[in-house]
Every structure is written in structure tokens, then in C-alpha cells.
Image (cartoon, rainbow over all chains, first blue to last red):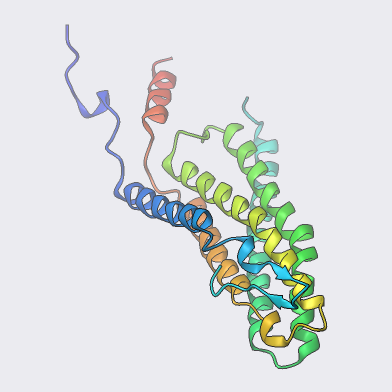
Length: 61
Length: 170
């Protein structure tokens, strides 16, 4: 005998705020990883070259 | 394992203190970073970047891990669980991401301190917008986590829904 497909017999749909959060979080992590991989971000952007006395400072990273 | 009501209150108090303390420390870093960018006095600018690294090791990193650890205890030791509610998962994601970025960023604090300690480096070289940007973004993320913790927006995960049904029928 099949159970009737009532709202109580299945999980509620994913709330909208969760979908928005997931998209934003995914984008942030993706951008972060891309910047790290391409060298556009991360500690290397701030490495200090003591021999030349010049710090390689990044604008935003 | 479920915590007793007294232990649960204690764990919650410690978790709130660590998490809000972390947010407060990040805001203090934001102020320090803005002072480093805007103030004229050279000694103060260099001092701001020099103090960031030890202060981050002594305050930011311990509070980040304390927040994560007490959050895990709080979720696993209560009926909230770790994967039952979307807002708990969202907080966990924010916490892990912010802690990871902080640990990676410690090398940057080290490089900034080295630049500030070098008398041959001019002030324009010592000043850096990066700490202000990172602490500003971190403060925003931790504010979102705090808001989630207070409002607890509804939404059960499929796992949480199954667990709830099991407990209901048991």
C-alpha cells in the first residue's frame, strides 16, 4: 500500500535564504580560490624583499 | 551525547563570549588598519603594522578556534545538531572559511610587520590597504554569523527532517 504523498511525508523545500546564501558563499569561495591559484591574492602579494628594500604590496590582496 | 541543561548554558555562554569576542577583536583590527592608512605620525603607522601580527596570534587565532570548537560542542551536545538546520551549517561554513583565511593571512601580517620594522622602507611602502579590507570583510562575515545565531531562520535539512521523524515516531 502506497503512503499518500502528503507534505508531512517529505522534507520541506529548501528555503530561499539558504539558496541565496549557497550561491553567495559559492561565489566567494570560487573567487578566493581563483585569486589564490592565479597569484592575484595571498601572502605573496605582501612579500618583503629586504635586498631591495621594496615591499611587494598588493592593492587589495 | 546530550549536555545537561546546566552544561548547555555554560557551553552557550562560552560560545557566545568567544564568537562575539572574535567579532570585537576583528573590529579593533579594522580600526588599527584604518589608523595605519590615515594617521600622519610615522612611529604610530609603523607601530600599528608591527602590533598586528602578535595581536593576531594572541587574540584572533585563539578566539577563532575557540569559537569553532565551542560551536561544535554546542551543536553536537544539544538537539540542534550539526547538520539538521541550515542556519547551523551556514554558521559552520562561515566559521571554517574565516578561520582558514585568517591562518593563511598570518603570513601577510608577518610580511607587513617586516616592512614596518625596516627603517629603510618609506611610509608609503609600509602602509597597506589589505588589513583594512580583510578585517572589514571578516567583520561582515562574523556579523552575518551572529545574525544567524540570533534569528535562527527556519529550514530543516533532509537529514534533520528524517531525524525529527525518527524521534517523533520513537
